[in-house]
Length: 96
Image (spheres, rainbow, N blue to C red):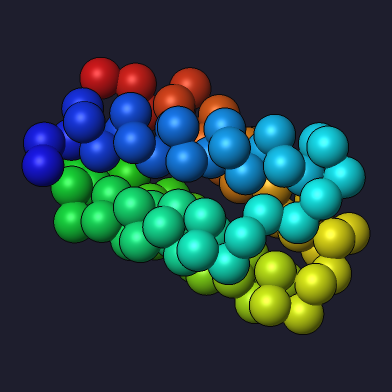
């Protein structure tokens, strides 16, 4: 899979998670695991200048799995917002 396709899949997966949370429900564990898997793959494509941000994003995605497992909707909501902020920062700072 190339970087462009991975970014598209990651964005689609994230949009689904945001939609669920904005609707007041927890995403399924499968949806969150898929998102986390995609976020982890992104680390493999990271250039040195944005490697740390990619690793941080993947770490947050893993935390999201734990929050969904414990059914902590408030924590899931917080992590979704943090992931959104992280993504926006990275795109602003390292746009190619």
